[in-house]
Amino acid sequence: MTAPGTTTRPRPPARERRLPGDADMWVMILGDLFFFGCYFVTYMVFRAMSAGRFTASQRHLDIDIGVTNTVVLLTSSLFAALAVLAVREGAWRRARRLLWATGACGVLFALIKAYEWHTEISRGHTIHDGFFGFYFVLTGVHLVHLALGVLVLGVAVRELRSPRGRRPTIVEQSVLFWHMVDLLWVVIFALLYLMR
Image 1: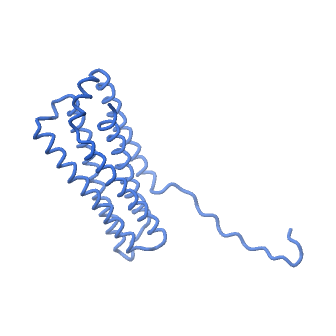
Image 2: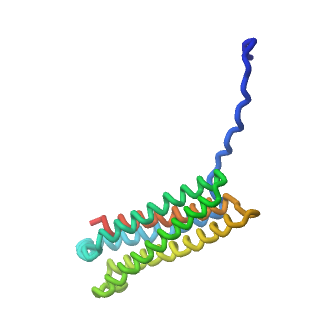
Image 3: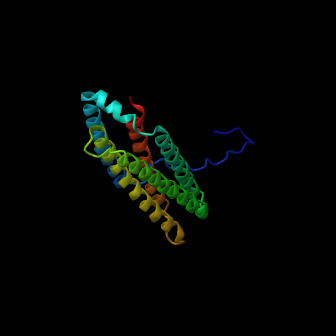
């Protein structure tokens, strides 16, 4: 009940709260995280059995390269998140530019990783070495996911070019996948480069 002479303003409609993307994307992301989680546990078990050898091998990795790649991917995640905000505001052109920047960071990450692989292989480190076996498999499977992420971002850019398309959910799903790729790298970086 309101006092005489006062007016009540209608309440703005409550924003619908929901997870971005759709259930299928979340199932895929959780499945990937489970797969990587199993591999991380396996790495930890093998590392515990040969801690001295693993630590000695880890010293061959260039932490500056790992840090650089981490900064590149975290920057890409910022661009991706800003792209989702731009889509929600209807700023299609800005969203496309931000998705392009996200993909460019992904390509830069891959180039840096290729340089690092080349350096390690030229030093004689192969997949048959204990630690480097895990290093090449973990970073290789991650790189495949990154390449898939760049492809998915390309699909989102294409979606934003079509005036009749422009479904925000496509952008949200591509960015969700990209964030998963970034999260996986942060864990891989911590396990391979930082944990001694």
